[in-house]
Image 1 (cartoon, one colour):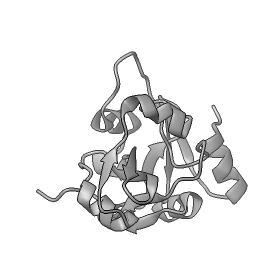
Image 2 (cartoon, helix red, strand yellow):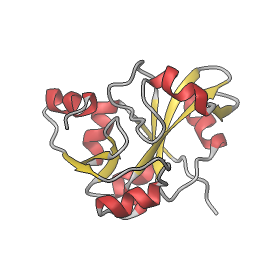
Image 3 (cartoon, one colour):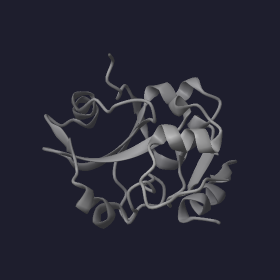
Length: 157
C-alpha cells in the first residue's frame, strides 16, 4: 500500500522499503512494532507531537526504546518550555492517527527534530503514515525528506 509519505520519497528519488505489520485495536508500543518489522527498537523511531511556548507545534522523532527529554526539545526548538499535545489534538494537527504519525506529508509542515542517534545506523524505520506500515530508509534520506534538525532528544538515565 502506497501512502502519501511513500509518494513524497518517490518524488525525491529516495530509496526505501515498506514493511507492513499486523495491528489490532490495542496501540502497539514502538518496541513491539520493532520486533514485528525485524529491527531493534533503537532503529524504529516514533514521532511525537509537541507544542512550545514560543514557537508552537513541532515534531520530535525519537528511538522506540527512548524517552523524549522535553527540556532538550525546548532547547532545540528555541522554546522555554514544550509539552506533548493531548491525544485528542493529534489527528486535527497532523491528519494522522496515533501510531501512524509521520513527519512526511503531514497536514501542515511543522519543524521536525530527529534524535541524533539516528545517524548511527545504516537504516531506520518511521511510520509510513498509517498504523501497520513502516518505512525503512537511510537516516540521511529521512533528514532530507523531512528537513529534520539532528539534535539530542532522548533522556539519559
